[in-house]
Image (cartoon, rainbow, N blue to C red; front, top):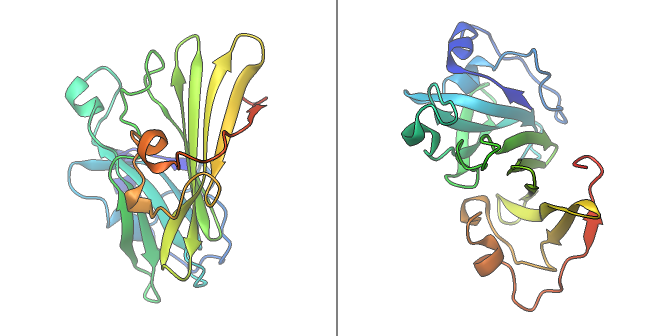
Length: 219
């Protein structure tokens, strides 16, 4: 996963892109965004994070990334800090260019949506055929959530395969509850997942309650 700001991106715009391994890992922190990715950033937007892997199993490197308004800083500009931050998937072509394939406009929480812990974005990662987004926020009592999407060849799209929500407890630390496709919810395409209504409208009412397990990384 790579965080970056637009001034740094523009400086890197002259970099060329080479052929990447089909199972590329998330870029290391020092790697500059490729020129093909910079070409997809609209005016007034900057990269919050990006990760690279073969997301549709065609043997070419693809990129999943998050956009936000230029110069976003928690609390400094409430209007800007509450703007949507779209999650975008771009597929690599034989010509080396990236082309947007899908996006979710509201799954990434806004920059001021973390409570006392203002920035809720935690991580973005990718591996062959899937990618994951996570949030972490709150104040003394913390909460978390995570979303994993997996490529479905028959539907030619990424479906939500796993969702977890977590919360601090007084006696057992940070407890996670995980839900899986086919057990707790049906096939949901990337653009269909709504973080605000997922638990109330998109999880099956008859689904079994997920078991809580301790998350030692959050304790």
